[in-house]
Image (cartoon, rainbow, N blue to C red; front, top):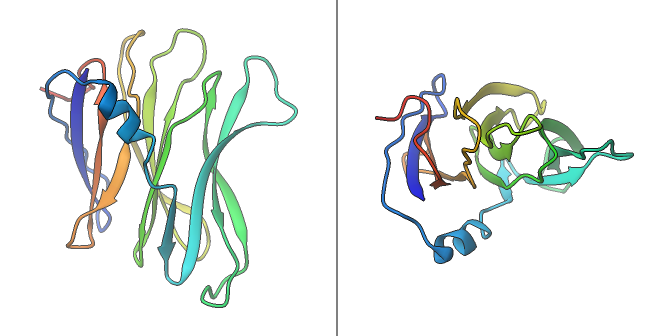
Length: 173
């Protein structure tokens, strides 16, 4: 399995680069399961989740939903927005947040034998509007991005995506 690490600026249009790595092992897969799914932005707590759409068609569609909780520190009411979906396969989700916004990543498939891609969305904390959208993807079937774990670098403006995959992604050299 290849490792990838991508960097995305929250202050500019998403620019994603990736570099390959060595073969992965089971320990890395268990680490991926501990990705952050909750974060705080501008006093509000946000949670990302993946759940089957009800009533679900077959194959099942899994909606990726970002939820903002109401609290004494949050200036806005509770709310949620569907940021994406996956057809037939549950998504692995991750979230990173600071006062500039909330970033969500999720794996998805479009159905059938399609490759498993990674969607990345930047969401405004106040309106829950998707302000930027990008992703990492393959152009061939049988390829998978297993997870894209998000973190914000100490500068507060750089979003890092790391995870594992089984082939080079588009644009990777």
